Length: 101
View 1 (tube, rainbow, N blue to C red):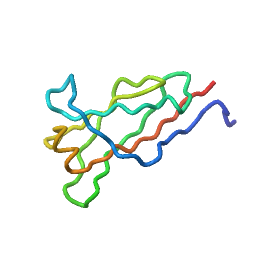
View 2: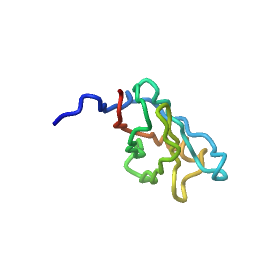
View 3: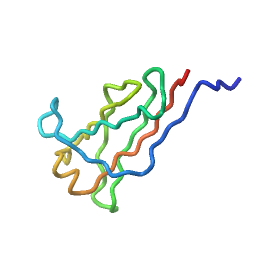
View 4: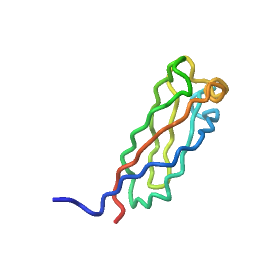
């Protein structure tokens, strides 16, 4: 049976501005605002990093601190410094699935 109170939400393609994490010294983090999705509780987030060129390959991303209005994404790996990630043009692509009522 299909549950109409579940919603799939994905952003329009927008550039990601990576900033320096307060928790992981020098590492890049982004905190997308997902409040427009209208979730009533923390959704399930799927995320990946996409590069504008074939090389270098984008690093992995970890998702943490998910709420109904935002989540934190942390870049993992050796090229995870905020200045490097911004310079290379890596973008965060994500989807969210959760309840809206």
